[in-house]
Amino acid sequence: MIVSESHPTSAVGSYKGYLSDINPTPNLDLISQKSSVFTNAFCTNAVSGPSSAVILTGKHSHLNGFIQNGNKFNTSQNYLPKILQEIGYQTALFGRWDLGTEPECFDNWSILADPTEKYNPEFLNSKSQKRIEGHSTDIITDLALDWLHKKRNEKPFFLLIQFNATNNPWMPAIRHLRLYDDKLLPEPVNFIDEHAGKASPARYQSMEIKQDLKLSNDLFFPSEQSDGNQSNETENSNSQKNLNLMTPEQHSAWTLSWRPKNEAFLRENQSKENILQWKFQRFTKNYLRCVSGIDENIKRINDSLTATNNTSAFFVYTSNHGRFLGEHGWFGSRWIYEESSKIPLIIRKPLGLSSPKTVSSLVQNIDLAQTILDYAGFQEGKGMQGKSMSQLLDNEDSNNTWRNSIYFHHNEFPGDQMIAKHYGIRTLKHKLIHFYQFDEWEFYDLENDPTESKNLYSKESYSSELEKMKQLLIRNRTKYLDRSDISIMPEEWRKIYRGPEARKE
Image (tube, rainbow, N blue to C red; front, side, top):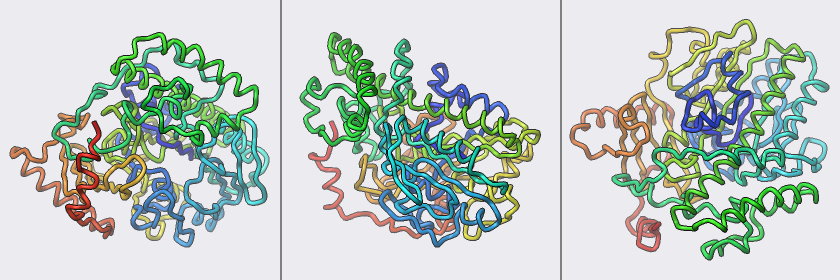
């Protein structure tokens, strides 16, 4: 199972999103042609640590105890590698680990000491720690393949690979720095979004490309040449940390690659509109360059499985959550909105058993652990809230009867990106969201408004459907045992975050 950080479906070619003509994932697309591609797969909480915990436990955040980044994972509970070990599997983990504890129930593991390190990162294992020269995506793959070829025994195995390339800072490998230089990326249809008619959280956040994406820290423009609005950037940024970690050769290649692009920008008309478009192009190209590095290494992993005759292995690719790549003018995550909550999910059954298909049923990352256990011959993970997707993978006609809605809960505010706490449900046709601290609602008709631009919560013509969705939301909270505090905050508290001094202009 390969899990990337914040990889949206728009940046996977086989999902035919707005970036499909650019397509940074040709190797993953080839695998998709022999796999089940889930077009309605979602996370339960679009934050890296909580989503990682959900994948491993098959339980929503409020039940597995890992609600927000900075929590500590409870290893006493039932979770996937623990159960697999108990039934005779060898388990291994390589790459990112967001759970605040030393990994347990993995026979072999090597994790990034700091997931923001992309160049020459430090890795920890049960015996030592050391820096390894290279780009993190390549090194993580090297470690995984070394284990697969040299250290694995004859037991059935579970190998978890977690890439960090697509989280901030978006610093691709040296070989990819000029990739897409000859392309002008298309902008999403809702790139310019005033969030008219929406609840206030859409206007009070910190993920706008226009003003929150920093020229130096995020886009690698020399700080001494940044405009006056960049004065808050510091020498201690994650991008600067990576520059300090580079070898002289890496640093020279990095600098030489950016210099002509930065000089070209300084020669252009720097109107607000042009700067916004330039920021979008640079951010999104860097992001896609990082995806291309992951895609190259997916090919290495797939080729290795074939070369070592592991034809009975399941292959799973997914992400812990999605990300905005310009949609709504944003670059972050955390929302129940489509770009953030929808995830790629590609599952290839063993060779000879695969029947490629597109699955449109509503599934979530809580379903992954139970699905893997099911195919491993273990019928039920105690306490897990997910469902095995085996019937969707094995049968042709189960798309419409499997699940009628998915439940999502973001639990952190104030916090990174300043996204208000909210919970909600999504069906195949509609989405209902409650920003409960501010007691504000949004309701969308996804069939007629797939970009979630028109909040219909106050529309009388939708009152009947809205009431059904509210009842369904209550049933989901009961079903998933979510007893989180959803109190409306006092007016004075709300004024702190919604007063004139908090407004984003």
